[in-house]
Amino acid sequence: MKFSKIIAIVTDLRLSIQQAVRPTLMAIIKSPTLIFRPRALSRLFFYHVWTRFGPGLNSATTEVKSNLIIIPYAKGIVLEIGAGLGHNALYLSPSRVRKYVALEPNVLMHPHIREAAAHIGFSEESQTLLILACGAEDWESIASAIGGQNRVDTIVSVLTLCSIPEPGRTIKTLADKVLKGGQFIFFEHVASKGPDICFGGCVLDRPTDDYILRLENVWETSPAINDDEDRRGIWGLVGEDKEYLLWHQMGRLVKCSV
Image (tube, rainbow, N blue to C red; front, side, top):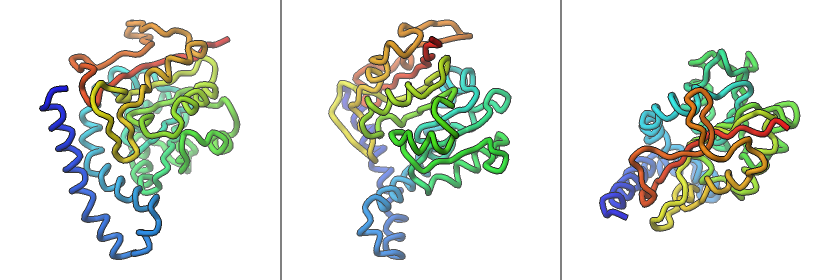
């Protein structure tokens, strides 16, 4: 790996820590019992990290989400894994999407999701928005909230599968629960050839794309179909090599209809 690439990611991590430390310390001073609640403390810290870097990351991935994956294809009942600050709601088309279900375990993010969804006319009052404080692995809670099994038309995952527990098992469960003919749309960083690094629960050396493709009997096709009207398969970003620490893969896979 090139030294410049290592320096770039280290710089990003340093800046994120600097951004999050002060407000986290202020929260501890205000409520000292946070020290004895490590999960709550971790979520608070990562919330401050994400409010700093989330908007920039959203801007950096606008072309991908606008032209390649979300806007052209997301439809019906859309379930997003790890909705974060709700930026991806802005790429949903109200004419194609009936309901946006946002999974986000960090409840500090929920007001931001509501605000983003409101920009496209989605709300809990109109039953076009549902926010769940559970992870993708908790399918029973998801199914109960959305009214049963096999109700989802589209699953969206953007830079999230790196942090879910038991990724292979969870991805298989999600694929099983998509409606026949439904789709799985994703943009993720996957296992690179560089050193192992974990940050904010994100494991950078996960072969997420392999987990997805192993379910070859679930998807209609594995090889990429380079049809602008119906692109399927898995592909990468132009100009990005496998040694890049945050090597990305994206894709759209359609579930077999039989």
